[in-house]
Image 1 (cartoon, rainbow, N blue to C red):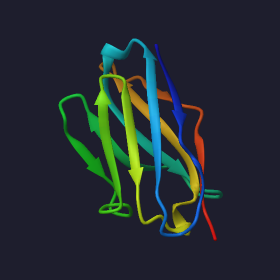
Image 2 (cartoon, rainbow, N blue to C red):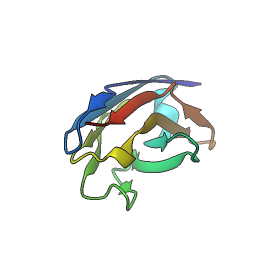
Image 3 (cartoon, rainbow, N blue to C red):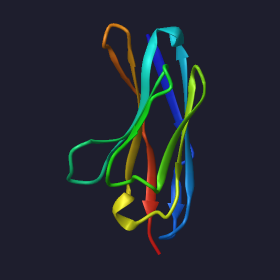
Image 4 (tube, rainbow, N blue to C red):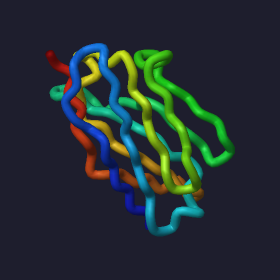
Length: 115
């Protein structure tokens, strides 16, 4: 089992920046991929960015060039979000998948971009 805890969300003006953190606990050495998803009101949850234990990263086209995912160590990732737009407003969820393709989710952290 893996537990995920996010932090770092909040309210920011358009053009501003936020950094989200996710810390995993439990069977952390079983984790193969960690990443971020987001869900805006009335919309489906969508992939934002992922980071594998092998060092590969991927970022959704909608945030490419503005968001950067980084892995600090085996159980911690963060998402640097720059040039935020109102359409980035959503609940952001940390996600992890282990070697058996079990998926784990954090409780989510709200990001609101508004003037």
